[in-house]
Length: 123
Length: 107
Image 1 (spheres, rainbow over the protein chains, first blue to last red):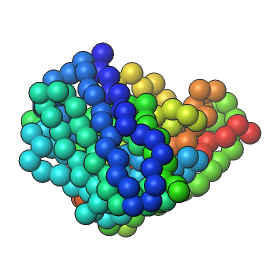
Image 2 (image 1 turned 90 degrees about the vertical axis):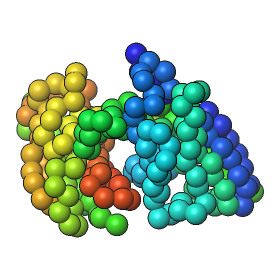
Image 3 (image 1 turned 30 degrees about the horizontal axis):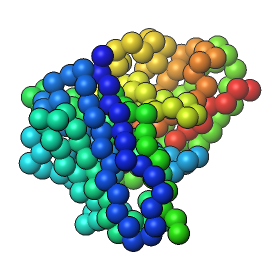
Image 4 (image 1 turned 90 degrees about the horizontal axis):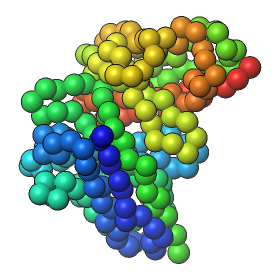
């Protein structure tokens, strides 16, 4: 069974940093792209970032470019989201999601999601 | 960034109704579009990928169609468990973008 478990959320002051982790199990982790998606409670979904299967390429939403960094450790089956210079508007539930297989691209499909971890940026 | 505009933002429908939700992209996105269902307090669930392919385990009353810039999610006969919020997602070009969501409520 595919499982994604996020951790690392919490309360942080504006300007602070936080690192989220997403531990994966039940599939061959190093063959999939991984994504981060966030959602302000009561609002819509916002795509945050993507990392390819070997970690060599990343992409970001304009709102987090230069402040957030996605990385992965395929030996630990874990993807990370390092969040720096946090702002109040970064307050949200952060989900990790499994994307496409590297060698069999499937469009529009994030087929497994974690339960989410809440990040609150407030003084 | 590509804007994904969903309509309507919300709708009220009865069990058994046929429901159609549309998603319009601000530019062509080939077939790089998926649909997701989200219930309160839960993670999104994939329904449709590549415009019209049904994700494994999803009931056949869900279907997707469209091309270019205009896409549709149809629920052929609304069931009690379908009351939720639905989102489209384009992954044609970065940054990927979701529609703003369509909340399907009980009439």
